[in-house]
Image 1 (tube, rainbow, N blue to C red):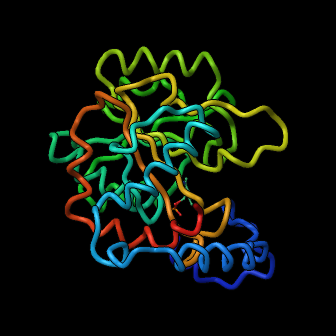
Image 2 (cartoon, protein in one colour; image 1 turned 45 degrees about the vertical axis):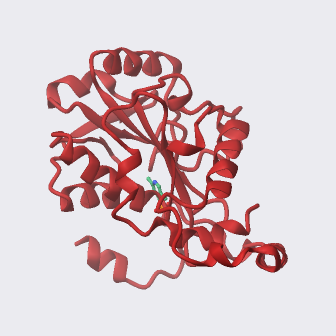
Length: 256
Ligand SMILES: Cc1ncc(COP(=O)(O)O)c(C=O)c1O
């Protein structure tokens, strides 16, 4: 059914989560691309670190510190094509570590859920209300990992409130892991910025975000990052090895 709906022609696009791609800063992008390419050493055009160039990972870490209140070691940042690629990587990391279930928000992103199930993970739904994820519904699912969009719940738009953040902290203290999809955290019209959950739960959160909504989700604007903060189980650094994450670095150089 969803495939049919997606294929249908829409006179007016009401799908949530699509930025104004006509506003893409073409001139600034071209200028930045030209400037960076002019000085880029030849070795930067070869195969590089599968996590992405060190300079880029440092920029991402600085961006996360400035805008999301996150202190992350650039060594633990992996540059990806976007959140979808980060979730694919994570699915394999989690499976290898013996986690077969990732609870997901309901309503939530159908794409994310399909992606996790395509990697063989069970995805029990957990409710969402006007305070965000129903953390009390997590335990009955038996999942020890949850995927959540705390800054701007997709698709409802609610922010995970303080009480729920404390409940989530208690859940992680019991061994739970959080995958934080920092979806649409940058666009705010009605409230002050909220910190990323990862900023207050070091060691229990895989954090992921992208510029799909800030710039554009397609070829030129795409790019994202994923990171873990010290101590998060299981091993994240090695997960970038089997991917070609460096290829996404090209477009990211322009952001420097
Ligand atoms: C819930 C959610 N998270 C993240 C994203 C961004 O995904 P990506 O970075 O792969 O474009 C989207 C895109 O629509 C989304 O719906």
